[in-house]
Length: 186
Image (cartoon, rainbow, N blue to C red):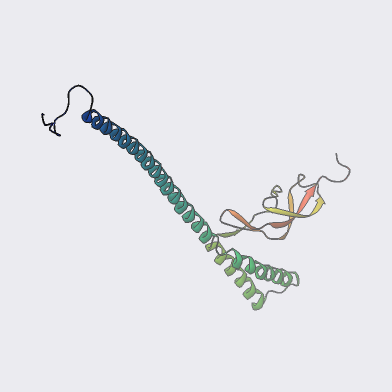
């Protein structure tokens, strides 16, 4: 009886060697499927990481812009409170002038008023020039209407309370009297 060597492979296409070859092919296909699935997962995670990075960079830029805007307008609450005192200084000066007073007290109040306007100007706060300008609801608050022959309709003919802007935003609209067409005119 002839001994068969377990290391020899039959050549007729049948037997243990063919089964081993089929097993290797199956294992190879399984490995290829796992590799393809791993590559898909890698691509998904890479895409997610790239989107997350872009979102975070956009978030950082947005926060920097928001912080810059916040710093630019940080003095709004203080300026709003100061405007009331500034209005009172204007009223005091106007009342003194109307009474014909020009003494050192009136001059001192006028100097303080001017200094406050300069301080506000240095911080980007300026008066709204309203007198004689067309009415703009973004800058003016119409308190009264007054018929006028000298001004076209919808023109500011009087300022009751000064308005102010800070940089490019309205801090407080000017309270104004707006002209209308004279009565009887069409």
